[in-house]
Amino acid sequence: MPADKSIAVIFSDFKNDHNDGFIIGIQNQANACGYRTFTFSMPQTSELYTHNEEWIYSLIDYDRYDGVIFVEHTFSTHKNLIPPIERSLRENCRCPVVVIGQSNLLPNVIGMENKKNFEKVVEHLITEHDCKSVYCLGGEKSIADERIDGFVEVMNRYGLPCGEENLLYGGYWISGAEALAKDIAYGTVEKPDAIVCLNDEIAYALIKQLFFVGLRVPEDILVTGFDDSPYASNSAVSITTLTADTHFCGQRAVALLHSLITGEETEQLKPKKHCIITGESCGCGRKSKLNVRAKFDELHKQEIADMEFRNSCFEEKLYKVRSQEELSHFIKNHKYLIRNQISVSVNLMENGDENAKCIYLKDYLINGETAEFRAENIYPDMFSFGAIQNVHVMPLTFDKRVYGFMTIGYAEPNVYTLHAKQFANRIAIGAEMLRVRQQCTDYAQNTQTDTKTDIIRNDLEAKKLAAAVMVVNKGSITKVPLENILYFETGEKKVFAALKSGKYEIKQRLFELEEMLSEKDFFRISRSTLINMKRTVGYKNGFNRTLLAVLSTKEELHVSRMYGESFKKRLAES
Image (cartoon, rainbow, N blue to C red; front, top):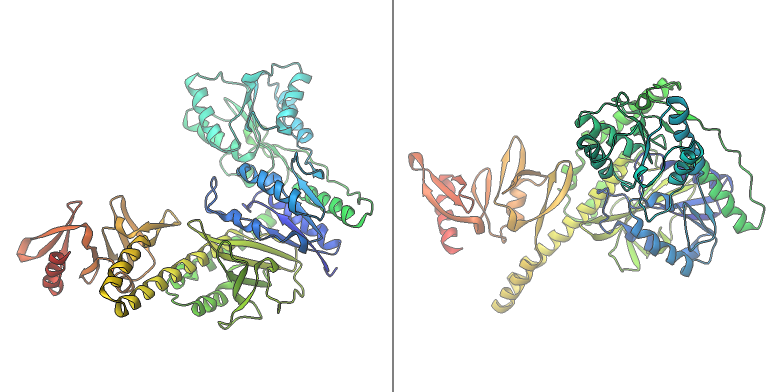
């Protein structure tokens, strides 16, 4: 059905887990009712902390949408964001709002029946395995949770002890599981018959840590999870769990929202029946049949996508981009890495700006053209949705700085993948590099035209910019101040930045660094090395009259004869 109306969805982050089902359910039902969906989410590079990605929610103009769905349930690790979002919806949103999860401020709330489903897991441990001592792990004491309520009710129903010692509030993260395993091993906490965890991720972390401290699952302790995430199907110990029907919950939210918008009765949707998915963690083993062909097909698609991303040399090519027009062409040539999309746009702006500059829009702005528009409109005026039914809007941020936003359009219900998150993150880094290069260019021009006084002032201002380079550290990209870098060197066809803590790969070539950092006290001492003169304390003669530069860390670097005299002169001047 073609969509003439639209719904805004406020979501946390896609992690390829059961929460993704909320969006698929919302999109399926919304498209069937004639709505186009706009999902605002914050793809993160950190699990626990945001780096201003939540800025994307300020981009939502509530007046442009027929209704809003706030998926509060997905903000479990970022609960500090929930109150400001709720206040904004209550004070500024005049269209109907439906919350999936919990809310004390907004009236229309859809729950997930977690209490009833969690009871089934606890009952399985009691009735099938005769467990008498059972702990519940997860959650926070100050936050109400239906799953904990279900645990308490079942324990009381069967006359089993259920005091404070049975409720282990370890939060919603794996740190609580790791601490509990150690407490049991050291005797601080009495070993129970079973531990039921609020989700599969906590259960997986607990099983792993129990193994490290010498306790076996299920031989010594039974463990169960909840929500049937990929963690439950791990190859080490499959976890007994129960499917959280997020897909159906998303459909119910749209049905309720549609009735609030139109005044019609809420459509009665038929839920699927769910039962426990047993695993090795309780001793039952996997009894449900797996669709092996579907699993292999999914793995094959993922392998192809991973291979395409690796072979694209995405980062290496991005770091050679020297202008906004080149960035636009780069996006055009690499948009295929975002699978299943039929539209991609990249829009640059800064936090606080009302207008955005679209530098790439598939089928419209593809050869370096740009178009300015009001950012809240999401797309420039020239754009036509056509077959696009579902749009994802994601921020372009790096090091807490806002560079704009990216949109991905799909014809069918879809969620973006890890590669799309990496794409957005790297484009933000590319924008940061263009900004730094522009500052270096402006500074170089000023030094040629200004008076001596202005040159000194601009030099001080340039130093205050805290120039930095991006280094690759354990698969992620981190900004490192130039003052912390001892030297750059090439090796094995790669370039590395040497710090006190070790050497880290960077994507620029050595000659590019030399050109960029000529005014930043970096000096070439050989074909393969650029040294930080501020970290150089002197030099000495080595074996066979070779010249060695001595760093503040007492490390010694070879200075080639070609650069020997100029190095000594530069050192004397610095």
